[in-house]
Length: 167
Image 1: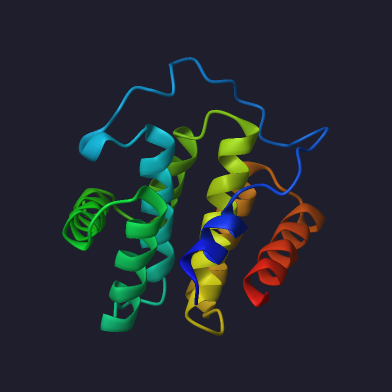
Image 2: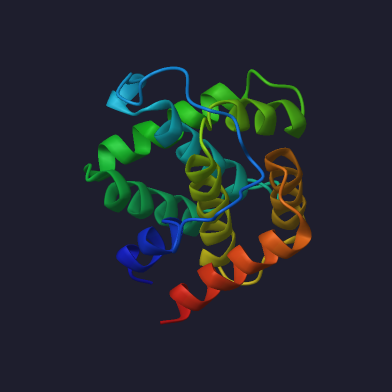
């Protein structure tokens, strides 16, 4: 799979006139977190990690996918990408259950575009290793609900990402 196809699939194809996630940003996007990532970028790393461990295990193939994806997305070497993923997994260990993790990720998404990018990232990660598992579908459903997406909006985004990845 070509990394640029996945990265392209994450970016919203067209602006939406009305979007369900209407929280407005109150802090500047340039405030970096660890590894010089913005809160939104960190949320995208986290949602990718959540999707990859949604089936209860993280295999070597999934780890390789994540390292390649993060390397391409942020223009970092594989060592830095591994560190980004490890930071995300370490942070997730501080939560009990999936709902607080999803809530934490969604809280960092300050605009409709941020929300859509994170949802697209989750979809692309889910589709990257083949057939979506029940756990991945459950995580995507929780993210969809937390973002306020209706079924039609979510399905449209999923189909857009599928189509872009199939090219």
